[in-house]
Length: 157
Image (cartoon, rainbow, N blue to C red; front, side, top):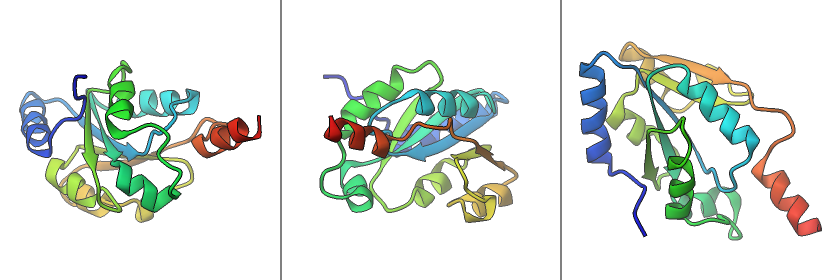
């Protein structure tokens, strides 16, 4: 199977190339364990803020620490494969830390995006991106869609 995860070094190099071309690099992150319409809408909205969207993808151990031993449902490479199949996503980069701060600092995107009810001041990496001349945006989630709710519904079936 082809790997769909880009190394941090390769991602940083590609970011610099895109920026030198005058393109805006957008970054978001998450688990993206079970893709659903809410994810698709969110990623399309994020991509609309620039020319290239990079998704920081929580590695499997990171998800287990966040969501519990029964997660992820799909392993890292499968989740990366699904994300790379989306028109909005240009690159997927995995991280195993509790937050994507070091990855954000490595890539230093022009636009940092999070979804839902985040406040800009509480978004990991926001301060660093703004200090480097970037912007931070909160994109609303599509109501009624959640991987956790989807998993609960499947278990109840």
